[in-house]
Length: 137
Image (cartoon, rainbow, N blue to C red):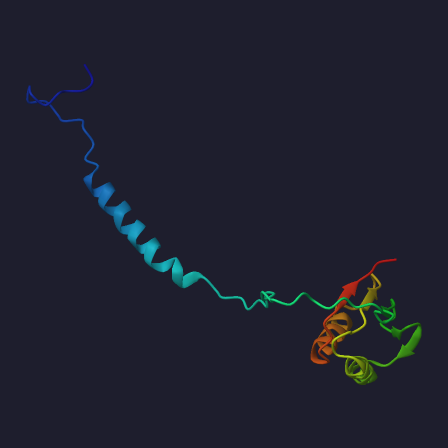
């Protein structure tokens, strides 16, 4: 017989699992303590409950068509504009009616530089534009 019951004085073949259980419990406690520390908060603006229904916008303004071509040239409603003048144009649109802003429809060419698109998005965010969308033709 390969295993002995220990009663006859032969070798004992049972595995002692107590150290294994001790190590597993210590690891479980370590993971339980460190798991809340590894979470990172993300700021999200969630809609708040209101008693009054939202006002219905009857005449939304025409959308702004912003296009970035393969040569990284920016077009505002099919008119070429430099990146430096884009902030003033966005500020003017926001100041016209801050509660009823036009939709900024961005169409970036596949061959355009991502840095230009990132600058356009940063400019729109700094100008407090709230309605930004991406279109693909």
